[in-house]
Length: 122
Image 1 (cartoon, helix red, strand yellow):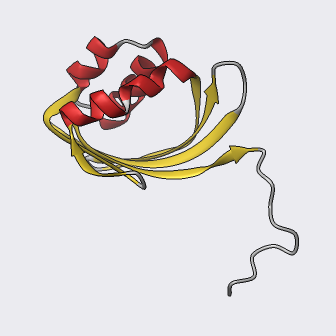
Image 2 (tube, rainbow, N blue to C red; image 1 turned 45 degrees about the vertical axis):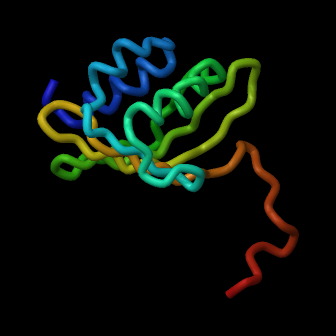
Image 3 (cartoon, helix red, strand yellow; image 1 turned 60 degrees about the horizontal axis):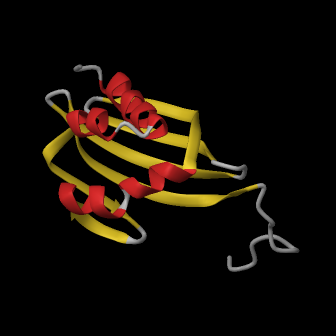
């Protein structure tokens, strides 16, 4: 698989199916993952720390899926098992038909309460 968008879609599909073997085939051996809770962790740490979260996910709806060369920008709404949704944005880097790096920017629960009066720290 060399099309970056198709590769990224396949990774989310594997996550929803709880198909670790399929995801392992898509992720490079030199893979790194970053989020507000993870500072460029390696592949083994990703599977130990993050993969168990797949059990709580029932689906992803892509809001934005934009390919720019070997990088795919993804905004999605995820659905939790038993209900509830959330929105995240990820920057996924690919090379040679595999995912080499993911940066996750956490969003919010949907719906989410906004502070009364809106944003005031301008």
